[in-house]
Length: 315
Image (cartoon, rainbow, N blue to C red; front, side, top):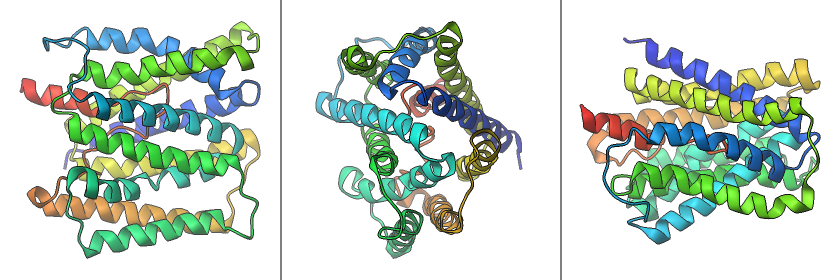
């Protein structure tokens, strides 16, 4: 077995966890609108230079404008929700709720992709969603807007992923990658005037670091999926909970309670089962979770699935 794929993925998700630590640190001083706006500015040149290598002829008008609009809006909401949740909630708690995304992708693939989901995956989804309830503990813990934001990250991130799966083969890579960036720039820029705070140079550097870490982690994920089997690489995302526990404890004084541990175990087990099930079904499934190769969307990251598809077409 080629171990380079899983190793690249583990490094990528460690970098993503560091990326989220920077977001949480800056989130103590600045609004998510401001953080997203400046991290988007820093992301533009990195992603544009990458796209300059795209030999595909055409323009930037989407082939599927309505799907592109919904996907772009979903990506913007998911990104903002993630930045806000990381700023307010313990890291581990945010990750656990975002880990519900594969469960939601499985459900959304039924109406959007026409995926046939059998009893095994349906049960896995139900069990996984029960894990979310264990983490949230409705009635016994105070739930706030940040919890809703974390769940919103999973919901809208899943919707964006399924839409990319639906239209990705027909839309240019540039359209899929630049439209959410442009939307973040416009929307967050429009709101920036209401929340802007002057920043010292070190904090401006932190905004740039968010973009740089997301870019490097994205490149490593591309290498991971290029060298490794998706069924082995995909579950590596759950390693982020380990980093969240370590960073949360040593940097922010956070602890992980028992319900969060139990809920995380249930959600992760359900997600891994769905990945294994899709890999075994092969051609009998559209494998929406396995083909969602990007990390859950945040404002500074980019989707690697279109780039991997382009690489595959060159071979």
